[in-house]
Length: 245
Image (cartoon, rainbow, N blue to C red; front, side, top):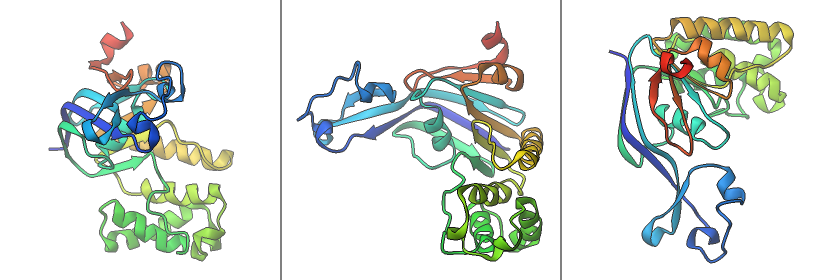
């Protein structure tokens, strides 16, 4: 069965450089370090670290629509990346069952010297899709991207918007069991943005589990059925009824 279950999950980033060893003092109350969120903690001989997530518990089963709320530096994007397997928890447990599509770093794994078509293959393989199935969908992906003959050109000839079209078209062409989304994606001109919205709405409906990080409390109140509001990496998962009460 598809699920996400976290128990007392913590993630600590080691701080590197002079500040990590305390040779140059920084004002952690009012300075730049404080503004990025997380708690600065000692790490013995390793210096200091930033505890980006602290004691996170999650229990998501099919049908779960989790909204992650919080200000800048609260740990929203970090939590998404941990759930997506990009970071390993420092302590605690995380168990995930199901094929994941993460729409929070679409440029991950892109090869700029390869063509758009070759990147469709590479991105599909990263998503765990068989080469045969990717090739079956390649023409559909190219058509959705509206890149025309550029699909056979090296990606380094693309604009940033064209790259986003290619990566979004590829990542969303294979139905995920678990969808992870960092804010609502908008790319391209008005017509293409309409296609993006339509596809995202379809994925939000068909994925078994969806997790979205956002600043938009009103959108989450309408869309999610469970909420975790993070503050310095801490938060408790609640049903939407408790959040809106």
